[in-house]
Image (tube, rainbow, N blue to C red):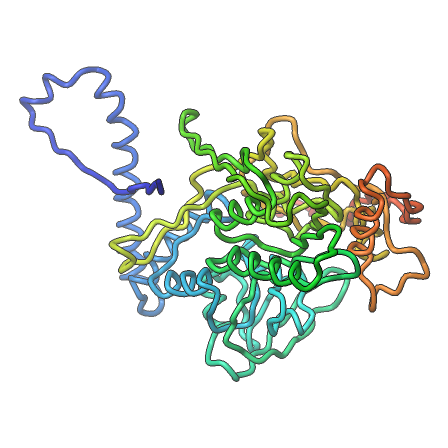
Length: 463
């Protein structure tokens, strides 16, 4: 049963006579509430002052919406306020069809950051990457804007061009011109690669499981001698929890998939697989990377914990929290997207901030391997300053030499090294039996602090 949180403010005025009967406990519990009312009064005073004294006239509605959004985004990077228009956009996106550029974004310290471009969209074709920062839209800065406001500027009529200014590590800012399209996201596709089936799941929307089931059935019908499968979850930014559960269920023959736990330790909800395996128990390898987040991590974690699949690629994003969308007045006043629980893999792991580590670590390119060694490959949940804490004593893996990277003779422009190694694991039967590649010659970088110029103390000023 879906759970909703009801948030409101209630004020009770007690007469002087009734106060004589209030217990000390009630008085103690009233103190925090009184402080809350005082802060709400402060908010009203600030709003009144801004209305009267700001240099230009202000829009009260926008101010209050911004204040609500600021309150929620101060909690963690994934809680925020959706005004009615943004709420409608979100519902369009989860239905799998909307207008825009095809970018999943978040906000980090007031800057719009790309979680992942979606397969086949204008952003994907233009080469926008996970971890890129969008600093301007059509020359107008989006620094300091909420995600909702920034997304509004990127969306528009299909066929219209829009220019994004991109900041990317180790490069100067550059402009990318894209043409808006109606984004009809096909979130699951499949094909045969030699003796193996390949299922690509790029997001989790309302259509994902139906698309995956149909795609798997089509490949199996056309290729009855398929020996195993590769599930590609790379750069999958997540989506709907129920779709992550049902995709996991395709490959599991019963047992737990994931549990979610709220503030109350007794508030635990478990999701289990039903009997039946869509690929008949054939070997399965899952591809992940740092762009595999949230619902994608639920699937990867479930299949890894249940020993149903081995994982190849790079440590996942590390988003181990669940957001509940709570409509306000039936959506007329928008909705809250509020973090209400953490999720745990079948073995009881919370991957919040730490991510899921693959069974065989493989960098996509030699450049990626060097970045991981240099600790410049930092795009993850742990990079958000206000992310929920990881479990006590746990931390995301730091700078290190990845186990494998493409050898010198491998052409990364025409080949996919991580996919090649996933095929090797299927051929060998397991990661343990797969012949290992030499470690890449990545050099661990020294941590050097910034050079701070010495500043001499100023001479005293005589008055």
